[in-house]
Image (cartoon, rainbow, N blue to C red; front, side):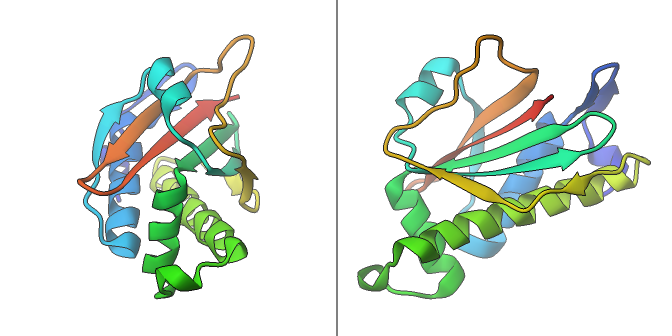
Length: 164
């Protein structure tokens, strides 16, 4: 992905809106065979989304970023089945968590590669997850960023990137 695909730069850092969506779409098409359509996610959509597991990574650079990928229980299971070739009756929680962490790592790596062509470099943390039924993120003052909902007919997820 070339630097020209990054939507634009501003004084606060990179704004990943279009590029962010393309990276998510490419990774999930390649790994889970789903063609996702992005939509803007309002705070209400974020709170109502039935999150079960969220993968997170921090990208350290001139302006640190936090990447979040949130999946419902079914979407996380679908992801694991696609990545590992397992059957639904063989699902193990640790395998689901590993699939979410690996997907988060792939998305962060592709974003890092895309920004390096602009002379912006990031160091990546290892991926980590939060697990809990219907969790959502809240802060007294929300950092600048973007959250999108990605859907196809049988799969949906939330993805966010926030500047720290």
